[in-house]
Image 1: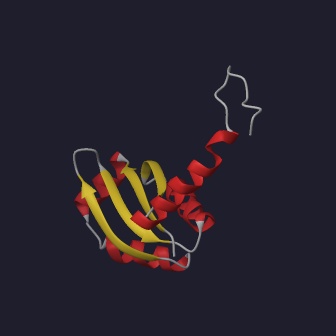
Image 2 (image 1 turned 90 degrees about the vertical axis):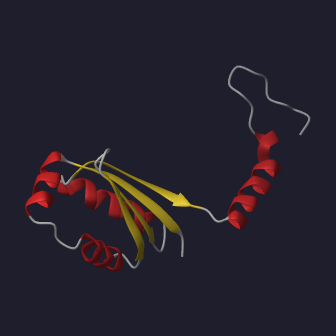
Length: 116
């Protein structure tokens, strides 16, 4: 199952609510990921940037995008970004594929290579 990192910067209102009553965010996010057919691996917080970093597995990119849409909709975050994470093997596959098709792209303003 693809693995993603979801990074969200909490709003000032969310920080104020958490200071009043810090609930179990891990359980809440684990349940949310499960509702999308995924699972939560871990969450880390960075207080200086008001950010949360969650590593989760989702069945596909559409499920990860749906998670981003829901988190954004709530207003609890100023912004949310979701990025797929690759293993070393997957990165090797990506680089091999890129090498195979690299001649198919030409830089804007330069002529296309017609020798391919």
